[in-house]
Length: 409
Ligand code: CTP
Image 1 (tube, rainbow, N blue to C red):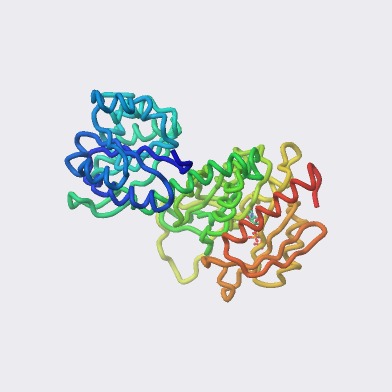
Image 2 (cartoon, rainbow, N blue to C red):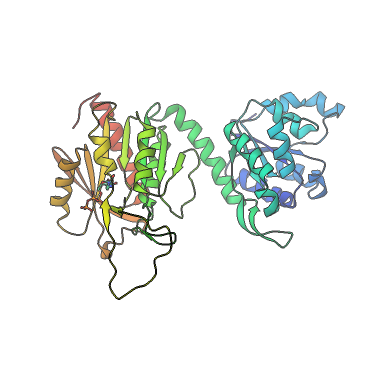
C-alpha cells in the first residue's frame, strides 16, 4: 500500500448519498485514498458499481459476506484506515452510534474501530433539531467524534433549515486539515504548548434587542489561532460573535460579553501563551434595561461603566502568569506612542500595534500592517495578509521560546 492517508467512507441512506461519488473524487484530488462501506438503504441512492469505479477498491456491504470476510473482515476494515468518515450521516446511524448498536457492517465497523471518526450529518431540519438527535450528537461530541455541518439551506424534501450535508469542498478541507494537524501535532515546534487566543468583538446589551459593539471581524484572531495550532500548539480560541466558522482542530469557546470573555480566559489558565487579539467593548451598561427602551425626547444618554481589561488581568497575574502575554493596540493616531504606553500600562510582553483608521481597512479587511513592540525593540512589519501575520507571530513565538526558557526579550 502507498503511504497516502486513507479514509474509510461509510455511506448511510440519505438523499445526500448521491454526493458520495463527488466526495470520493474530491478526496482523491487532495491525495486521500478512499474505501467505501455502503449501508443497505444507501444502496438505493448510489450503486456499488459506481463507487467501486471511483474508489478503485471493493465496496463493502454485507456483514455476513463470506467472500468479503475472507479478504477483509469487519475488524480489519475498521483498523486498516487512518480515519473513518460517515457521510452522509443520517439520524438513524447517529442514533445507533450513540447507543453502540451494531446490526450491520457499517455500525459494526464503527463500534470496532480504534481510529478517529468524523461525521457529516444530513437530514430533515426537524429530525436534526429533535431532542433525541441533539442528545445523540452531544454524546458523540463528548466521545471525541468530530462533526462537520450540517448547513442551512433548502432540503430535498422542500423544507428550509439546518440539515443539509456540508458541501464536498468543506468536507475535503476538514479532512485535509485533520491530517495536516495530525502531522504538525507530532512534529510542530509548539507541540506540547498550551495557547489561548481571544478574538472578535464583544456585544454589550443595552436592552433586549440593542447592544454596543465595534467593527471587528475576528479574522486576525482566527488567523493567529490557526497558525499556532498548525505549529502543534494545543489551542483554545475565545471568540465574540463573528461570521467565521469554527476552525477544525481548535477548541472554540463562544462568548458574548467582555465579562464572559474574561471568565472564559481565566478558566483556560494556566497556559504557556496568551494572545489578546479581541476588540473588547470598553464599556457596558451600568444597568441593563430588561424591556425595549422607548423613544422619549430628542436626547438620550446611556450610563456606562468600564469593562474589565482581560489583557491587563492576565499580564498582571502573580500566580500562573503565562510565559508570554501578547496584546494588540488598535489606534487611529500616534500609533507608536499610544501602543508603547499600552505595553507599559497593561504589563504585557509584546504589543502588535495596528492602525485601524477607516482608510487602513484593517477592521473587516484581509490585510494588516503591524508594528511589533517589545520592552526593548520595535520592528516594522510590511503589509501582510492576516494569515501571514499569524504565521510571522508563530515564528516569533517559537524563536522566543527557544532563546528564552523563562526570561523575556
Ligand atoms: N483588551 C482587553 N480587554 C479590554 C480592552 C482591551 O483584553 N477590556 C486588550 C485587547 O484585546 C488588545 C489590547 O487590550 O490586546 C488593547 O486594546 P485596544 O482596544 O487597542 O485598547 P484599549 O485597552 O481598549 O484602550 P483605548 O480604547 O483607550 O485605546
